[in-house]
Length: 279
Image 1 (cartoon, one colour):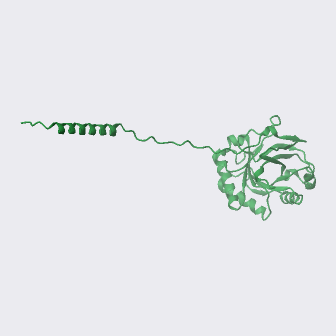
Image 2 (cartoon, helix red, strand yellow):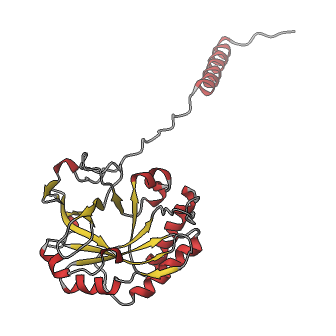
Protein backbone atom coordinates (compact mmCIF):
# COMPACT_ATOMS: atom_id res chain seq x y z
CA UNK A 1 0.00 0.00 0.00
CA UNK A 2 1.34 3.51 -0.89
CA UNK A 3 1.37 6.06 1.87
CA UNK A 4 1.10 9.74 1.14
CA UNK A 5 3.87 11.95 2.49
CA UNK A 6 3.01 15.04 4.45
CA UNK A 7 2.85 18.26 2.38
CA UNK A 8 5.95 19.91 4.00
CA UNK A 9 8.10 16.94 3.11
CA UNK A 10 6.85 17.01 -0.47
CA UNK A 11 7.75 20.68 -0.76
CA UNK A 12 11.21 20.16 0.70
CA UNK A 13 11.81 17.20 -1.58
CA UNK A 14 10.82 19.25 -4.60
CA UNK A 15 13.12 22.07 -3.65
CA UNK A 16 16.00 19.64 -3.15
CA UNK A 17 15.38 18.15 -6.59
CA UNK A 18 15.39 21.57 -8.22
CA UNK A 19 18.64 22.44 -6.42
CA UNK A 20 20.30 19.24 -7.62
CA UNK A 21 19.09 19.83 -11.18
CA UNK A 22 20.40 23.39 -11.10
CA UNK A 23 23.79 22.28 -9.82
CA UNK A 24 23.97 19.61 -12.53
CA UNK A 25 23.13 22.14 -15.25
CA UNK A 26 25.74 24.50 -13.83
CA UNK A 27 28.36 21.78 -13.87
CA UNK A 28 27.52 20.81 -17.43
CA UNK A 29 27.23 24.32 -18.83
CA UNK A 30 30.02 26.04 -16.86
CA UNK A 31 32.85 26.98 -19.26
CA UNK A 32 36.47 26.68 -18.40
CA UNK A 33 38.13 30.07 -18.09
CA UNK A 34 39.59 31.13 -21.43
CA UNK A 35 43.38 30.96 -21.65
CA UNK A 36 44.90 34.41 -22.03
CA UNK A 37 47.43 34.47 -24.83
CA UNK A 38 49.86 37.31 -24.55
CA UNK A 39 51.00 38.82 -27.83
CA UNK A 40 54.80 38.97 -28.15
CA UNK A 41 56.15 42.44 -27.61
CA UNK A 42 58.58 43.50 -30.32
CA UNK A 43 61.66 45.20 -29.06
CA UNK A 44 62.23 48.59 -30.65
CA UNK A 45 64.69 48.38 -33.54
CA UNK A 46 67.97 50.19 -33.32
CA UNK A 47 68.10 53.17 -35.69
CA UNK A 48 70.14 52.68 -38.85
CA UNK A 49 71.83 55.23 -41.10
CA UNK A 50 69.70 57.01 -43.69
CA UNK A 51 71.91 56.51 -46.73
CA UNK A 52 70.21 59.34 -48.58
CA UNK A 53 72.02 61.69 -46.18
CA UNK A 54 75.50 60.58 -47.21
CA UNK A 55 77.64 63.51 -48.29
CA UNK A 56 80.15 63.00 -51.09
CA UNK A 57 83.22 65.23 -51.08
CA UNK A 58 85.97 64.60 -53.66
CA UNK A 59 84.95 60.95 -53.97
CA UNK A 60 84.91 60.38 -50.21
CA UNK A 61 81.69 59.46 -48.40
CA UNK A 62 80.76 61.06 -45.07
CA UNK A 63 77.73 60.69 -42.81
CA UNK A 64 76.35 62.50 -39.79
CA UNK A 65 72.99 62.47 -37.97
CA UNK A 66 71.74 62.32 -34.39
CA UNK A 67 72.62 58.61 -34.11
CA UNK A 68 75.69 58.10 -36.29
CA UNK A 69 78.93 59.63 -37.37
CA UNK A 70 81.36 58.12 -39.86
CA UNK A 71 85.00 57.51 -40.67
CA UNK A 72 86.69 57.32 -44.03
CA UNK A 73 88.96 54.36 -44.73
CA UNK A 74 90.68 52.07 -47.20
CA UNK A 75 91.68 48.42 -47.45
CA UNK A 76 94.99 47.37 -48.93
CA UNK A 77 97.14 44.37 -49.71
CA UNK A 78 100.26 43.55 -51.68
CA UNK A 79 98.38 44.63 -54.83
CA UNK A 80 98.76 48.29 -53.76
CA UNK A 81 102.55 47.81 -53.74
CA UNK A 82 104.63 50.19 -51.59
CA UNK A 83 102.52 52.82 -49.83
CA UNK A 84 103.51 56.26 -48.54
CA UNK A 85 101.42 56.21 -45.37
CA UNK A 86 102.14 59.82 -44.45
CA UNK A 87 100.51 60.94 -47.69
CA UNK A 88 97.63 58.54 -47.00
CA UNK A 89 97.11 60.15 -43.60
CA UNK A 90 97.27 63.64 -45.13
CA UNK A 91 94.59 62.51 -47.61
CA UNK A 92 92.20 62.17 -44.67
CA UNK A 93 92.20 58.38 -44.29
CA UNK A 94 91.14 57.51 -40.73
CA UNK A 95 91.26 53.70 -40.81
CA UNK A 96 92.82 50.95 -42.89
CA UNK A 97 92.04 47.27 -43.20
CA UNK A 98 95.21 45.42 -44.15
CA UNK A 99 95.32 41.94 -45.62
CA UNK A 100 97.42 39.72 -43.40
CA UNK A 101 97.25 36.52 -45.41
CA UNK A 102 95.32 34.26 -47.75
CA UNK A 103 94.65 30.71 -48.85
CA UNK A 104 95.35 29.77 -52.46
CA UNK A 105 92.25 29.34 -54.59
CA UNK A 106 93.51 26.17 -56.29
CA UNK A 107 96.45 24.92 -54.20
CA UNK A 108 94.78 25.40 -50.82
CA UNK A 109 98.12 26.52 -49.38
CA UNK A 110 98.37 29.32 -46.80
CA UNK A 111 100.39 32.45 -47.58
CA UNK A 112 101.24 35.62 -45.62
CA UNK A 113 100.68 38.90 -47.43
CA UNK A 114 104.10 40.18 -48.53
CA UNK A 115 103.32 43.77 -47.54
CA UNK A 116 101.50 43.17 -44.25
CA UNK A 117 104.26 44.11 -41.81
CA UNK A 118 105.27 47.20 -43.78
CA UNK A 119 101.66 48.32 -44.18
CA UNK A 120 100.85 47.71 -40.51
CA UNK A 121 103.85 49.72 -39.31
CA UNK A 122 103.20 52.53 -41.78
CA UNK A 123 99.55 52.92 -40.78
CA UNK A 124 100.20 52.73 -37.04
CA UNK A 125 103.13 55.14 -37.16
CA UNK A 126 100.94 57.71 -38.92
CA UNK A 127 98.02 57.50 -36.50
CA UNK A 128 95.66 55.52 -38.72
CA UNK A 129 93.38 52.97 -37.04
CA UNK A 130 94.20 49.43 -38.15
CA UNK A 131 92.24 46.24 -38.70
CA UNK A 132 93.16 43.07 -40.57
CA UNK A 133 91.38 40.72 -42.93
CA UNK A 134 92.11 37.20 -44.05
CA UNK A 135 91.24 36.06 -47.57
CA UNK A 136 89.69 32.64 -47.09
CA UNK A 137 89.30 29.75 -49.49
CA UNK A 138 88.45 27.17 -46.84
CA UNK A 139 86.38 24.20 -48.00
CA UNK A 140 85.49 22.91 -44.52
CA UNK A 141 85.45 24.00 -40.88
CA UNK A 142 88.82 22.42 -40.14
CA UNK A 143 90.47 24.56 -42.83
CA UNK A 144 88.67 27.69 -41.56
CA UNK A 145 90.08 27.09 -38.08
CA UNK A 146 93.49 26.46 -39.63
CA UNK A 147 93.25 29.84 -41.36
CA UNK A 148 92.36 31.58 -38.10
CA UNK A 149 95.32 30.01 -36.29
CA UNK A 150 97.69 30.84 -39.15
CA UNK A 151 96.50 34.44 -39.17
CA UNK A 152 96.83 34.91 -35.41
CA UNK A 153 100.35 33.50 -35.51
CA UNK A 154 101.25 36.09 -38.17
CA UNK A 155 99.63 38.84 -36.09
CA UNK A 156 101.63 38.01 -32.99
CA UNK A 157 101.38 40.69 -30.31
CA UNK A 158 100.44 43.51 -32.67
CA UNK A 159 97.59 45.69 -31.46
CA UNK A 160 94.40 46.07 -33.49
CA UNK A 161 91.92 48.95 -33.35
CA UNK A 162 89.20 47.20 -35.34
CA UNK A 163 87.59 43.72 -35.47
CA UNK A 164 89.11 40.99 -37.63
CA UNK A 165 87.40 40.36 -40.99
CA UNK A 166 86.60 36.99 -42.55
CA UNK A 167 86.77 37.55 -46.31
CA UNK A 168 85.51 34.69 -48.51
CA UNK A 169 85.07 35.62 -52.15
CA UNK A 170 84.63 34.01 -55.53
CA UNK A 171 87.90 33.29 -57.30
CA UNK A 172 87.95 32.92 -61.09
CA UNK A 173 90.70 31.28 -63.14
CA UNK A 174 91.04 30.95 -66.89
CA UNK A 175 91.99 27.29 -66.96
CA UNK A 176 91.37 25.97 -63.42
CA UNK A 177 88.40 25.57 -61.14
CA UNK A 178 88.46 27.30 -57.76
CA UNK A 179 88.37 24.83 -54.87
CA UNK A 180 85.46 26.74 -53.27
CA UNK A 181 83.35 27.04 -56.42
CA UNK A 182 80.84 24.29 -55.62
CA UNK A 183 80.40 24.95 -51.90
CA UNK A 184 76.79 25.46 -50.81
CA UNK A 185 75.38 28.17 -48.53
CA UNK A 186 75.43 25.96 -45.44
CA UNK A 187 79.08 24.98 -45.88
CA UNK A 188 80.20 28.56 -46.50
CA UNK A 189 78.34 29.68 -43.39
CA UNK A 190 79.68 26.80 -41.29
CA UNK A 191 83.20 27.76 -42.31
CA UNK A 192 82.70 31.44 -41.53
CA UNK A 193 81.32 30.63 -38.09
CA UNK A 194 84.19 28.25 -37.37
CA UNK A 195 86.70 31.02 -38.17
CA UNK A 196 84.81 33.66 -36.19
CA UNK A 197 84.33 31.44 -33.16
CA UNK A 198 88.01 30.52 -33.19
CA UNK A 199 89.18 34.14 -33.08
CA UNK A 200 86.58 34.89 -30.40
CA UNK A 201 88.17 32.19 -28.24
CA UNK A 202 91.42 34.14 -28.61
CA UNK A 203 89.82 37.43 -27.60
CA UNK A 204 89.07 39.04 -30.97
CA UNK A 205 85.75 40.25 -32.37
CA UNK A 206 84.86 39.35 -35.93
CA UNK A 207 83.24 40.87 -39.02
CA UNK A 208 81.89 39.19 -42.18
CA UNK A 209 82.75 40.65 -45.58
CA UNK A 210 80.16 40.10 -48.29
CA UNK A 211 78.40 41.57 -51.30
CA UNK A 212 74.76 41.34 -52.37
CA UNK A 213 75.21 38.18 -54.46
CA UNK A 214 76.98 36.33 -51.66
CA UNK A 215 74.49 37.52 -49.06
CA UNK A 216 71.59 36.20 -51.15
CA UNK A 217 73.11 33.10 -52.73
CA UNK A 218 76.24 31.89 -50.94
CA UNK A 219 75.63 32.56 -47.23
CA UNK A 220 72.85 31.83 -44.73
CA UNK A 221 72.84 35.38 -43.43
CA UNK A 222 70.38 34.67 -40.59
CA UNK A 223 73.04 32.47 -39.00
CA UNK A 224 75.57 35.31 -39.23
CA UNK A 225 73.31 37.90 -37.61
CA UNK A 226 75.53 38.19 -34.52
CA UNK A 227 78.37 39.64 -36.59
CA UNK A 228 78.79 43.10 -38.14
CA UNK A 229 78.71 43.22 -41.92
CA UNK A 230 81.30 44.81 -44.19
CA UNK A 231 79.31 45.20 -47.39
CA UNK A 232 80.74 45.73 -50.88
CA UNK A 233 78.62 47.43 -53.55
CA UNK A 234 79.93 49.78 -56.22
CA UNK A 235 76.73 50.99 -57.92
CA UNK A 236 77.57 54.65 -58.45
CA UNK A 237 74.04 55.54 -59.59
CA UNK A 238 72.22 54.46 -56.42
CA UNK A 239 74.73 55.74 -53.87
CA UNK A 240 73.32 53.45 -51.20
CA UNK A 241 73.83 49.79 -50.33
CA UNK A 242 70.94 47.45 -51.18
CA UNK A 243 71.50 44.98 -48.36
CA UNK A 244 68.57 45.03 -45.92
CA UNK A 245 70.75 44.30 -42.90
CA UNK A 246 72.70 46.57 -40.54
CA UNK A 247 75.98 47.58 -42.16
CA UNK A 248 79.15 48.30 -40.20
CA UNK A 249 81.28 49.30 -43.18
CA UNK A 250 80.26 50.02 -46.75
CA UNK A 251 82.92 49.47 -49.39
CA UNK A 252 81.52 51.80 -52.04
CA UNK A 253 84.38 51.85 -54.55
CA UNK A 254 87.11 49.50 -55.77
CA UNK A 255 88.82 52.10 -57.94
CA UNK A 256 89.58 55.01 -55.64
CA UNK A 257 92.57 57.31 -56.00
CA UNK A 258 94.52 58.01 -52.80
CA UNK A 259 97.68 60.10 -52.46
CA UNK A 260 100.60 57.86 -51.57
CA UNK A 261 99.12 54.77 -53.30
CA UNK A 262 99.98 54.08 -56.93
CA UNK A 263 97.29 51.49 -57.63
CA UNK A 264 93.47 51.80 -57.52
CA UNK A 265 92.24 51.37 -53.94
CA UNK A 266 89.03 50.25 -52.23
CA UNK A 267 87.24 53.12 -50.45
CA UNK A 268 85.08 52.58 -47.37
CA UNK A 269 82.79 54.42 -44.99
CA UNK A 270 82.42 53.13 -41.43
CA UNK A 271 79.21 53.93 -39.55
CA UNK A 272 79.71 54.60 -35.84
CA UNK A 273 76.90 54.79 -33.29
CA UNK A 274 77.46 57.96 -31.32
CA UNK A 275 76.74 56.37 -27.95
CA UNK A 276 79.65 53.97 -28.60
CA UNK A 277 82.05 56.55 -29.91
CA UNK A 278 84.82 57.66 -27.62
CA UNK A 279 84.36 61.26 -26.58
